[in-house]
Image 1 (cartoon, rainbow, N blue to C red):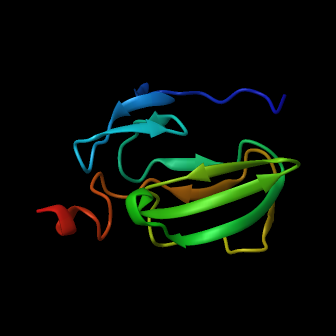
Image 2 (cartoon, helix red, strand yellow):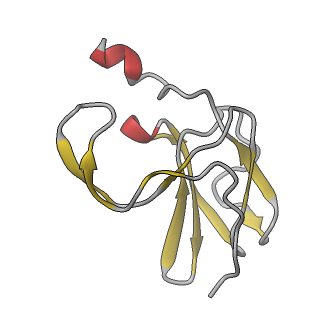
Image 3 (tube, rainbow, N blue to C red):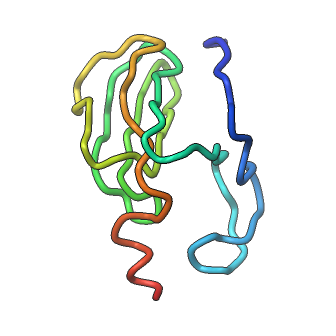
Length: 111
């Protein structure tokens, strides 16, 4: 529908039932996690509007791209945002970088 994107480090957590990586309990995962090293550039998978760019609990710093009737959420991004809420972006535009492996502000809560 919106084209393909390249996954270079594999899916680290699939859609569906899984063991929660932060709580250890079973949970339903509403997305997929794609592993990538810190600093990896993240690109818009389609044209759309940035509708969220802030901290979001277990997702760490998060950016949401909205287009048509869907939302694409990029979690665990660097807090040094490249885009802001309301920005219109085009497919392939650099919109964020992967943040550190830990979840900002959440890992400490569970130690």
